[in-house]
Image (cartoon, rainbow, N blue to C red; front, side, top):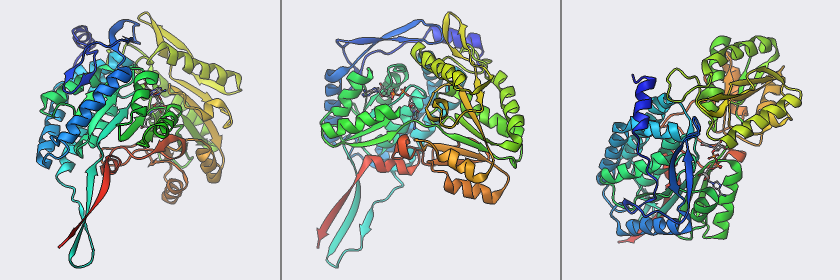
Length: 494
Ligand code: NAD
């Protein structure tokens, strides 16, 4: 196990890639750039190229050329499989470096990046690599003298635009299934966390994946992201990020070439706790994890707790007692409970929600303070507000920070109504020991994933995504492949 000192020493030796990776190599520096700062200290890490329209044009051209060459899109299943498995191995071999890049870029605890994010990204590249030679196409029951083949074909150039909260994982969620079925990818990482994606592109080349299959264009949203969204030669755009920006991509598609758009957006997920929950102390630990893990910067963060009146007070005290385990600290220190908030702007935004909640009549139970550490004030205490009005901003809007809103309910019907009273529909969790109630709630709550007696469960093999303002299309599982293939019918008359 690495210590705080070990991580700090390795961090000091890191190299940050800063230029777009296109057609198998890092490009020239562009006309524009942006600063990449460590939110935990405020230190400048690197000056990164904003690829912009010119950079996106080059990357899409490289992706298109490789796609048309057939080197990857028409390669044998075993060729793609072996190279993607090799990329998974290389990501695993470079786990400490990738974890550090993400931690320094966006403030998460390096141990979480190292023990959870990078291994999950490795498992996804393996999962989709292994799927490649196990999925068959179909033969339709057509009239005698004919053969009707139903083929799943890659669509071409996939644009992927991802957020900063899980940089290594978000890359794998999009690129692994898109590449597995033969597409070429142009991926734009978030401007707050460009470094690990630029490094993984280089590892893909080292793995023998043909040049132009995985291109990474760093840049800002309204320059590089927009250029990718509007590009007339991008066939599919897979986006993860806020609902607001997701809506732009639908517009970009309409204004350009009707590219297919898949959106994984935000959430305001409820954790519904009934008085008959088997163990309230365990449930409180799950609640704490569901809101404070990764500084609350989780799309499916369970930022609303709906708790039955009989156990309301006891449960709120149990959750508040868990806050000590999530005290913010240096992200490189394994003893820190939470890391830093991604940026001063996001910290300001979180504190605006805290201030507004205070003046809306909600009761502050614990936390609520911004914290200064190591010369940076991008830290926020784990925070709980009780008696939150379901109509208030804190109950309705995604904070994307470590702030929990608690509301009490009396009956099961009331709990369902509150859970569904949201413009989002990404995830929900339910704590109950009543089996029938568990099934009823799983059926009645309108969310892409409902977890009973746990919080926010997901795996490589299960679909992940939302309803309503949380978007559409599914990441993870074999269903994700459907986003990156088209059905082609081939008739052979004989
Ligand atoms: P964001 O929407 O601000 O940015 C996401 C990406 O879009 C970034 O790469 C950004 O540069 C780009 N972008 C921003 N403005 C753009 C524009 N005008 N045109 C084109 N591209 C633009 O989100 P964020 O702050 O990076 O991430 C947080 C959000 O992501 C939260 O809402 C969170 O819920 C969501 N998220 C969802 C999932 C999911 O699977 N549903 C997973 C993780 C994060």
